[in-house]
Amino acid sequence: MPHRTGSADLPLHSGRAPAWLFGRMKQLAPAIVEAIVIEHGRRTFLERLSDPRWFQAFGCVLGFDWHSSGVTTTVCGALKEGLAPRAADLGLYVAGGKGKTSRQTPNELIAIGTALGIDGARLAYNSRMAAKVDSAAVQDGFDASERGLERFYLAELHRLRGELLRLTGDLEGSERSFIAAIDFARAQGAKSLELRATTGLARLLQRSSRTMDGRAMLSEIYGWFTEGHQTRDLIEAKGLIETLR
Image 1 (cartoon, helix red, strand yellow):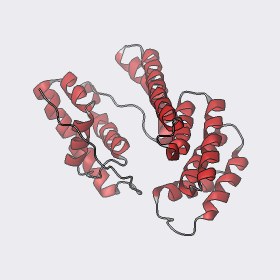
Image 2 (image 1 turned 90 degrees about the vertical axis):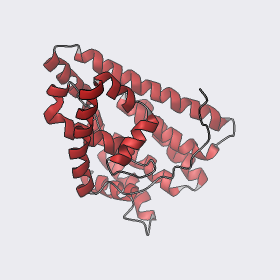
Image 3 (image 1 turned 45 degrees about the vertical axis):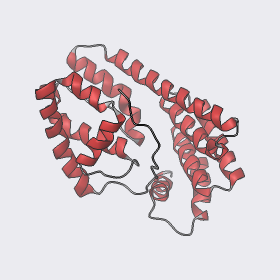
Image 4 (image 1 turned 60 degrees about the horizontal axis):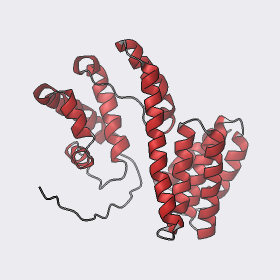
């Protein structure tokens, strides 16, 4: 059976889901999930959830109809909070999240495994391996960029690698990637990319008792911006600066 092919322009957006919308998503998401599980079973729901087109449509049905920005973390966050009271009944558990919450993923998986009598440590290991697969996908992006196809994205690719290495516990490798991202961003004069990479590095340094170093670096690049302080990246940077004391 033939499939339609093509491309789509999916621009990035700043900001975050409004609290009133996220609250409704938490109520609607588990109701839809419960209907699918009762009618078709858990396996079918998980298969649908892994389909990027179905997932995007699911986010739109929940009311988060941004093109692509934030849909994964927002929808999964709504599922995690909404399904928590019904997890045992539906047999569906959600672990992980964004930012600091992501670092609790192994502990959450181990706790779920303990509660269900399954190997939670193995679940945590599989989660780390999935992150390594993501890292390999990022490496494919490096290969394309270094061949001159999309050199502009090298700074962002290094930043993404830094985030992935941080999640897998390779703090030294993560720091090297963030520093490379900052260097590429500066060479391109891409201040927004430099801000993102510096935010990641400052967050990493916070874990290694080098808080003030991270704060100084982040404050310097943050101070360069004279407008756009309501964008997500600048809001996140400001919040981190205030905690790095």
